[in-house]
Length: 128
Image (cartoon, rainbow, N blue to C red; front, side):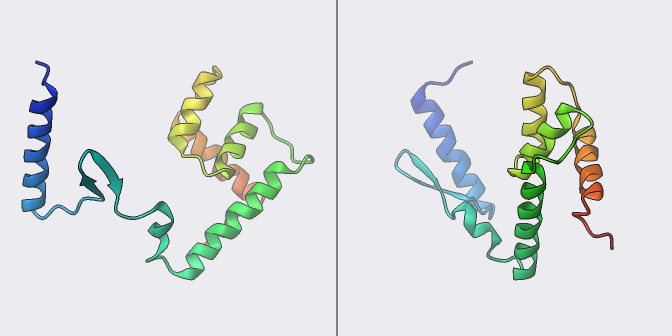
């Protein structure tokens, strides 16, 4: 059964009202037909300690320098692709999809393992 536009809007409004009445805190607000986020993506770090933000910044800066260094070697081309995309902040899910488009089938655990091996090899993560 396909809903008409009006039926869908009525159902959507009913659902939003139920969610609001139950105490649900939505990350979006709606004005007319426009849905917008209540806060920008840069605002997600506002509750993070400064040291954590700085550590993340330093990690990705060091990772990018290593990945872009022409002297850096990789066992396989897909490892290079994985580390390049990871250094750009790509999600594991997106990296996996991009690899599949290139004809390389790696599951998410394998991609994480490749990232961890390179982090260890390049001494990017400090063990606790």
